[in-house]
Structure formats: C-alpha cells, structure tokens
Amino acid sequence: MYEFNKCVDRYNGNHKVKTFSCWNQYLSMSFAQLTYRESLRDIEACLRAAGPKLYHVGIRGKISRNTLANANQTRDWRIYADFAQILIEKARKLYRNDSFGMDLDHTVYALDSTTIDLCLALFPWAQFRKKKGAIKMHTLLDLRDNIPTVIVITHGKVHDVNMLDQISPEPGAFYVVDRGYLDFARLHRISQTGAFFVIRAKQNFRFRRLYSRTVDKSTSVQCDQVVVPENFYARKGYPSKLRRIRYYDKDTNKRMVFLTNNFTLSARDIADMYRCRWQIELFFKWIKQHLRIKAFYGTSENAVKTQIWIAVSVYVLVAIVKKRLGLNQSLYTILQILSVTLFEKTPILQAFSHDKCRISEGNAGKQLSLFD
Image (cartoon, rainbow, N blue to C red; front, side, top):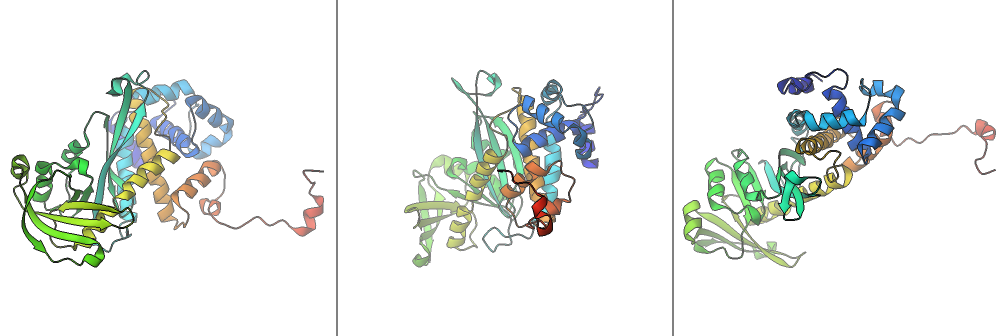
C-alpha cells in the first residue's frame, strides 16, 4: 500500500476523488483479471453480489461501471506501470537463484513483441493497416525467472528494432533476439556497453571469413567462424569482428545461423541459449490465454494501457505468491484457485493444499441424498 500510494501521489491520481480511489480501481480491475470478467457490467454485477465481503478485500467505495469506466479513461496509466515495476523488482529478487535450463552465471534476456489486434472502428487511435487496428507489447523477459523487466506498449506500426533504443544494456548480460532485430549499428552499441547479444542471421547476410574455429560436429554444430560484415552499411555500423555459428536442429530439420559478439562460450551453448528464447513466446501465449489483454473494457488509449499494466502486475503477483509460499502448483493452477477463493475467509495456504474433506461416517445417515 505504501509503494502504491507513492505511485498515486506521483501522478496526482486521487485528485478530486471522493469515494472510488485508485486503490479501489486497481482492486476492481485485478478482480476482473483473476476471474476473467467479460465486461464492466459483468464486473459490477459480480462485485455487488459479494457486497458484504468487499470490505475484507479492501474495496471501500461503491462499485459502478460508469465510475470504473471513467477511472480507466482519465486516471494516468503510469500509476499502474510504476507499481508493476515495483512488483517486478520484488519478484526478480525472489527468483534470482533459479535456473532456466543452462548453467550460466550471466543474466540472459529475451526481447520480442506480440501484436494485439483491435477493432479500428472502436480504437481509431491504434491504426495499424488501412482497415485494421493493433498495438504491440514489446517485452524484455528475464529467462531465469520468466518475469518481464521492460514492457513498452506502442502502436502496431512501430518496428521491433526500435526497441533496442529503449533498453539500457546491462554489462555482462546476454540479449537473445530474433532476426527482426538485426541492425548492426544498434548491436554495436550493445557490444560497446560490455553486454552480449545472440541473434539469427538473415539469409542475405554477406560476410568475409577471417578464420574458423574447431567444432565438434557430434553436437550438431556445423561451423564456428570469426567474420566481418562485407556489406558497406553493415561494416560501417558494426566495424568489429563477429562470431558466426551454423547449427543443425534435428528436431525441426532446420539449419540456423547465429551471430554473436561473445567468443568465450562454446558454440553449443550459444545455440542452446537461442533455443531458450522460446520462453518469451510461451509467456505471450500464457498471458493472452489466462488474462484479459485481448478484449478491453475501455476504448481510449489510457484505458487500454491501464488494463495491460494491471494484467502484468497480476501476473507478477501470482509469481510472487508461488515463490513466497513455496507452492508446487503451476501459475495457471494458482490463478484458477485464486479466481474461486478471492472472497473466502480461509488461510491462503489452505486453499492450495491437497487435503480432502472427510465426512464422518456417523453423520452420513443424516445427509439427504440429492437424487432421491
């Protein structure tokens, strides 16, 4: 609450607010995310049905769809973006010592984006094509904990490669990206900060081989070369040496070529690191399936960003609950259990226990049968 109120005061969120505060708005929208409500009317009906229990959740004001719609439209979305960043920092500390499938001391990030389609008639500010609207959710994901560290929401027309200008490279960290982020000048800036990158090369990438390194072809690595770009603009943007690795994936029967500025790790480790990039695709799939970020309760840009950032904070909160309570269930299972136990007056650990209710045999005869 203290950190949340600091975010509210930073943007003067409760200015001229009498009853329905930003905290009430956040709790109402979080309830909608956890229980997958379909509309503002749906949120209003369900919360009013649980009227006496709202006090225990923390909601003090009266729930009205018009009030909630106005709050989503007018209150600064950066309140919830800043609060989500605070939760992200707490979650990353909890998952700091976890492994993501590789024994590395370096932090590994995956950068990618997902497109969220919108109806152009309802969202005219998000024009993507002539008759189509869309926004992009650019995400930098820490592969060690599957926690998004940077999220930028833009119009669908913004190219992915521009996000390389939005991140501050961490020295010693790896940034794994797809071929859509291939811009040699931007990659060179990452290299100059002491960070490393792993990226797939395009088919038309022209290079001059300086020398080849010895490889073990039993690891599916076909070649490991030190090269320099041959194209004029590529050589101008990246004047240093690059490492080119060609890898054959037996599972997909594909040959992939990677470029990196790291000359220390083995070629197989570089290929395995790129394979772990698939976790960001699974993150996008999970959050789209289990949280409300494809259908929106408001049509303004502020309402859309507010809903997305609250959804991200709910995802991070579920991850924090899982780690702090030492739960073995998946994030999906925890989310489903929370959706039906939000208003229950039971210890949270009891909701996630597997102990089954036992009925005393002595009282079994007093229980009427449902089908008699």
